[in-house]
Image (cartoon, rainbow, N blue to C red; front, side, top):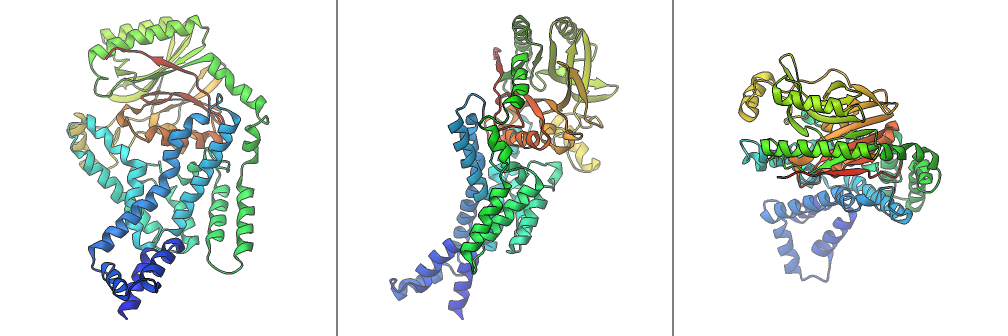
Length: 498
């Protein structure tokens, strides 16, 4: 009875066949081992043993590393998904990323039930640990560790529910649903988006087809060769062959419509530290750099210049003397070039995170629609949220948001406005805009994996809605995200004195 219990416990921990076969054979059945050693191994892995806890913890970490490997590899090869990379580098990178995403989905289907809590905890940390980094710039930087642990526990709970049953159909459905659920309004866990730089399609049908193909191929039963062939056939059907064609010459004409954006637009990239951003000396230096960058762009016959989110970290339209002078200067310069930049704005008693668009000596202010949870709004009831606003932000209420996505006109095109977090949310892509300008400030999370996950989500929505995204960022790469394989670098560095 004890032998059966220990054996069952081991198999519940190492249920995928490559782990189960190894440990089941070596520790319980191998005649090569001395009987006394086998007895001692069973004791080590007894139910109350701390060694079992440690083993499950380490297995949870290993599975999580495999589950998230695609993102960290993408961070290393992201430069190969640009127009100036060779065809061979693009093809190799797309195939590598495709294989790693398939591994990730396979792990979801195979992960043993006994370690799903540990797996979820570490996967949540590996994907979203960077959220806690923003607390470095708050009045309570000591909360960084607590926030990271909290993130891990939230995803441990979600993964526990999503992996509770070992049925592969259940796990396919749960992974699909977890890509829709947004805990605390945070919607960056989108498994379908992981296919953005792969050879596969990014729609729901392609995602479900890939998961079903993997489940069929991983099923341990009869007719294995036939199932593998059917699985391979389904995977081939899920490949975006039009995307593959675009790697060579299929989308030359379509890409030719995107490339002029790089010629006509100056996309600024800055590296202004978050802790220095609010100092007057930094603001003065940035203003000088902005004026210089605009003059250079005009001299090069650029038609539009884009600066990152809150590049001017003050209320630009409050009517005070200093902001008024800045507005007047920008309006004058906009006679020769359209200027897009981020700053705060007021509308009555409301304060907004906004995009200012200067064109032909006129001004249009577009407000952020989807506020970042905890950074710009606290997704809790008012009686809990208001004390936290006072504690962390020194204000009585959160920033205000616009009701609907907002557009502006420039370069003969209609552009959807997006400010940082909302550019990675499906709500901003209502009506499938063809062109989108996104401004970001990623200094809150520098250095981290966040900009690469952000880029993957942007590519996903670009492919899904055939949208071209012009992205200007602080402390991460500025780039044009296209609906095709290639992205386009068209970046100017904004210099400033710290």
